[in-house]
Amino acid sequence: MTPHDFFRRIEAHARRHPDEVAYSNGLHSATRGALWAAAASVAAHLRTLEGRAPVLVIGHKEPEMLAGFLGAALAGRAYVPVDDHLPAGRVARIREVVRPAAELRAEDIRRLAEKPVPPEPPAAAGLDDPFYILFTSGSTGEPKGVVITWRCLLSFLDWLMAEQKFADRAEVFLGQTPFTFDVSVMDLYPSLLTAGTHVSIPRHVLAAPRELFALLEGTNPTTWVSTPSFAAFCAADAKFAQALLPRLRRFLFCGEPLPEQLALQLLDRFPQAEIWNTYGPTEATVAVTSIRVTRELLAAHESMPLGCAMTGVRVYPGDGQRGPLPDGERGELLIVGPSVSPGYLGRPDLTAQKFFELGGERGYATGDLASVRNGLLFFHGRMDDQVKIGGHRIELEDVETNIRQLPGVRTAVVLPVRRGIHVEGMAAYVLPESRGGESDFQLSTQLRKALAARLPAYMIPKRWIFRDTLPTNASGKVDRKALLAELEIKA
Ligand code: AMP
Image: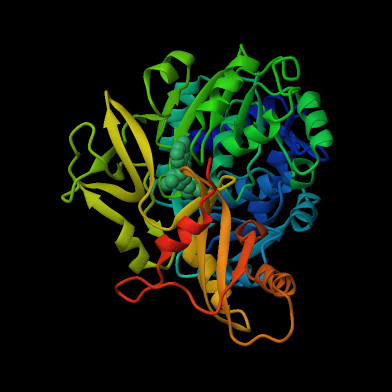
């Protein structure tokens, strides 16, 4: 697919079936015709602005956000999705890095859409032009922006759509993740390109099981795209079964390890649905490996495989020279090919640490430990301090740096609370500067509140432990191993 094909397909669906619902979030929906017309109005507005700087699209799963994304692309600009619950300080950092040409919220896009415009051809887009920029937690305490080009996006979509063979005008995609998480790209664009219906679950529904189940039942999805954590949350209710979602034919999981227990439970409850485990970092565009998970596969392997690399991309545990390690040996997982990002926006230093060139192709060192057995990749955890909690990617140093900057904190260490390889949450060990008479509970409430002004809610540690000193190891550094052992939850 070329950028031209991408627009042509979405536009053709909008022209042929203007009144079909393209997108809904349970409360608001948009037809194909309205969405395309709104995108054209956004593009017309953006064309009046100088240069090609990106556009921030701020909100939470409103149909207008989608019009904002398409409108930016039509005008030849990258978009940056920003969650409207992100603390202002964090948004300010993003703004400083991006220097956006415009910031659009749902109400701005609605206003622009009130002025229909005659259709104009999309701006010429080269494969190396950025399509979107996604900000993710950075170990320096600042978010870092991963630049995804047209080449990255289209190589991912070509592979996914060929592999999954989504039926034209027949799919209802259920998308759990917000647009600020790239798993959403797995449901959003395949839906637009195959004239499917996209149902995105807004956060207030995710938090209310009764409403959530009503929405699931009412929309009757055919393809489910989520983190395993979300499916596990749904599966805690026995009603989550084929009778509730009779048309469901496919679960696509990404973003964190898929527990075998969950896969087995879903295989039992949804006899007509396939279950797919896919793996990939934001830096290599959503997913770069996949495998269909069956009972036979699980019986044949001790742990959940990540599967095989997508077409045209090499994914392998590397040795010191970036060559592949022999079967069975563990090493850092490297990704080399067209879906790898050019790097982090405005951060050549960070880009040079993680990205490389190999044989004329772009490569990324994931920080994931992996091995190959019988042609399948297996994941063995992280090599650094990045964790996944409920599917959210968090650098522990990001949280730590932000806690250290709070008033009254001398220093702090943030560690994962683990049950086996599964991370259940974070704990902050804090050395307060000087204490008045307040209790630990009062102090932790104050710090949580102060931290919430700097970081999104999922980055606030659940446990707060106050100490006068922290244990040190032989080299005089904080003994993280000793603290980790204190925190581990025995299975
Ligand atoms: P993100 O950039 O948020 O997509 O996070 C990427 C990281 O999530 C990877 O580097 C892995 O550590 C983890 N991850 C993603 N998918 C999987 C999977 N299927 N199994 C295990 N870990 C995964």
